Image (cartoon, rainbow, N blue to C red; front, top):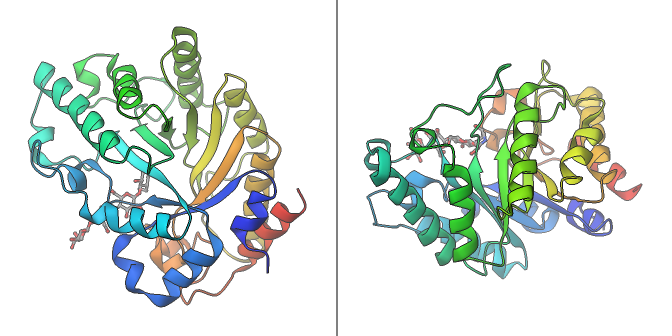
Length: 305
Ligand code: G3I
């Protein structure tokens, strides 16, 4: 039978999922994971607090559990995320200036090197731009080490793993008219012009009733791709239910299918009950693991490509 993964692969794309390692003992969860998805993103186990809980003391066991399962199942892995203002261990959050810059680049180097050859794409930097209308950088400890922190991270990741695709990942950059989207666009254009090693832009694609899938989503994707990078929907989930939710999922998938360099889609969890926002019932399978209308809409959109 056709699955999300096989239908996506027929279009030259992947269909992936965010995974929580401790759920790999849940047979319903693992059954859906193994059957339906071709790429896995650890939802939390590769974040800064999980991988470097004490300075220069790395703990890869929780992430390895997910990576090993994925690779054993013939799946690929997206790494999430090397540098983020959130989820920082206290030792890192307390550093400033050159000590912080050195520690953050050491983190990138050590984690990327450890997963060299196992992680096919990294969210090198996550959510570095502020919300709102300014298009400014998000104020963070990393940002306060200087504007060049993002490109320094990409260079460090490239040096540690020349084969991995290096992505910038963010949310609320799906609407091309928004200042945040335009700010990320300008950064990527500048990086490509200066030879900063960036290979892709991850659009998290968390949609809600107030932030629906834009009618011109494909144009946003195409604008980024035309800069010479891949685009990926990296954390897709859509608040809602029934036919309306299914239609929104169809629109998101169709937008990616319309752009050749949209290389894949990842939904941010397996079942609604696995979601970071379970009450929004935003995923393709319900709490019991049953396929929802949104699942059927996604599969149909992929098969009609
Ligand atoms: O592991 C601890 C557990 O030991 C503790 O008992 C429990 C209660 O405090 O917390 C557990 O950690 C939680 C972790 O998820 C694992 O379940 C954290 O509190 C909780 O904050 C964390 O939430 C995650 C969130 O990122 C913050 O890291 C969500 O699962 C995850 O879906 C969400 O994902 C983010 C992306 O990384 C970036 N884009 C936005 C997206 C949604 O916020």
